[in-house]
Image 1 (cartoon, one colour):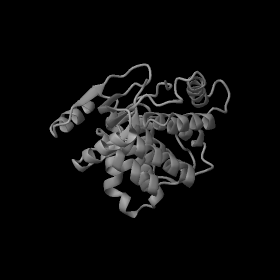
Image 2 (spheres, helix red, strand yellow; image 1 turned 90 degrees about the vertical axis):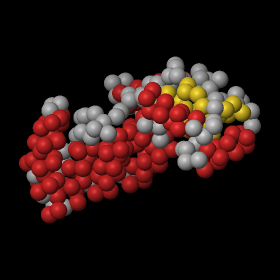
Image 3 (cartoon, rainbow, N blue to C red; image 1 turned 30 degrees about the vertical axis):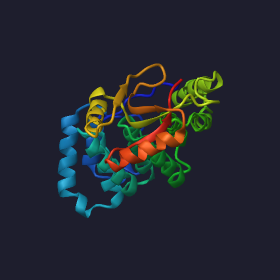
Amino acid sequence: MRPAFPILLAVVLPLFVPTAGRSQTDERLDAAELAADAGDVDQAREYLRSWLDSEAAARPDAEVGRALFLRARLAESVDSAEVDYLEAAIRADEDYAALARLRLAQLRLTSGQPALAVGDLDLLRADFPGSPLVPESWLWSGFALDVLGDPASACAAWARAADGPPSDPVASQARDGLSACAAGRVVEAVSPGYTVQLGAFGRREAAEEVRSRASATGTDVRVQEPDSSTPLYRVRVGHFTRKDDAARLAVQLRSDGLEAIVVSENP
C-alpha cells in the first residue's frame, strides 16, 4: 500500500549534515561528527563524552544542542536517542534542530509511536518553514498517517513531497505513494472494518513484548506480520464493523496502561 520506508533505530545517519557555523564550533565536535560519518562509533562517542563532560556547562545552547544531536545518532537504545533528539530540537541552531526533529519523528514512527511522529513533523514545519527538510517531512508525515489508518491524509502529504526531479529520492518515494493512492490501494471509500492497534514496530521482539503485556490483561492480542502494505509488525486487538465499538475497547486498554488507537483494518 505505501512505499517502504527504512527502519531507523540507533544507527549512524549521515543523510544530511548542516555546515552553517562550523568554523565557530569546538574542534572536538567537528572531530566527533567526522568520526561518526566515517563509522568510527567508539571514537565519536569518546569525543562527545569528553566534550559534554568538560565543556557543555560553559558553551552556548546551539553547541550543546549539536553535541546532543550527535550523541543521539550514536545512541545504543531508542530511549536514549529519543531524549537527546528532543533536547537537540529545542537547543540547537536551526539546521541541527530541524534535523533532530525529523530524526525524532522517524525514530518514533519506527518504534511504534506514529501519532507522536506526526506531531514532531508538524512542529518541524511550523518552527522551520524555510528548512530544506520540509519536503522530507511531508514524505514521513505520509508514512505516519498511513500507519495511523488515515490514507486520505497520507496521500495529501505525499502530494506535498512529490515535487522534484527524478533523481530526488524524497520526491521519488512520494510519487510511489501517490501511485498507490491513484491505484486505489490506499484510499478507502468504504472502510472494511476497524481494529485497535497497540503499536507498530520494526522488530518482532518489540511487538511480542507489547503483545505479552497486553495478553496479561486478559485481552486476545495478535501480531500482524509485515506484508506488501507495510514493513512493520502491528500489534492489534479485535475486529469491529463499528468504529464506536473499537473506540470503547481502546479506552479500556488505555486505562490498563496500553497505548491504544483505533485504525481501519487493511482490506
